[in-house]
Image 1 (cartoon, rainbow over the protein chains, first blue to last red):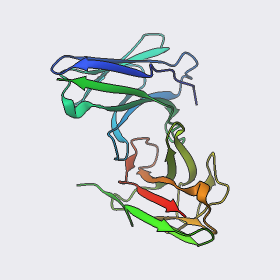
Image 2 (tube, rainbow over the protein chains, first blue to last red; image 1 turned 135 degrees about the horizontal axis):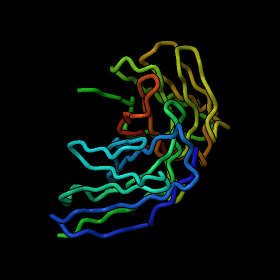
Image 3 (cartoon, chains in turn green, cyan; image 1 turned 90 degrees about the vertical axis):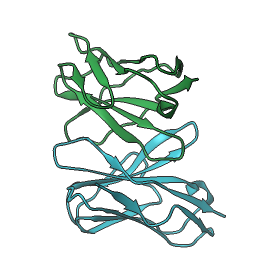
Image 4 (cartoon, rainbow over the protein chains, first blue to last red; image 1 turned 180 degrees about the vertical axis):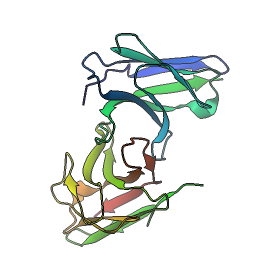
Length: 109
Length: 112
């Protein structure tokens, strides 16, 4: 699996958009970009994934650059409940995921 | 509502005991995974299974074994628990050809 690089931590004001970056410059053509988050003392939760095109669901939007070397997860209106560690993972369809250290997002009132 | 359940939220065992951690999913998923999570080390994959009676080693299988006799159940076994196996253990499952993993709530195991 391709290695991903994320900032260690970020802050975001409540109600504002949270933009979480991820670099995956060695991503292969068959690898998807997955985003998960983990709220304290809970198991990780799937958020969204994509291959080439931008994706949106009820939780977030995923913007993938044209060269696929980086992506951004966007939480459009962050709330205090979005405070969590966010993991960006590059993996082919059925291979086990490798979770890195992630980005600790703090949403501040 | 889809669900992955783990047998215990908290467990305390003594060194040398045999420990069974059970995971059950009700989504008819083919793939199941066991991770452990430790501060500063993140989630690390112990074992996984793509089918009944099938198992594959993950990144840190030493000291662990697994059993998958039925599709919905994946058990993690510590043959002789040691203090360095004190950790949070997380089970997950996915459908075939898919990496949308559903995680259980975790079991916090303490080995004294």
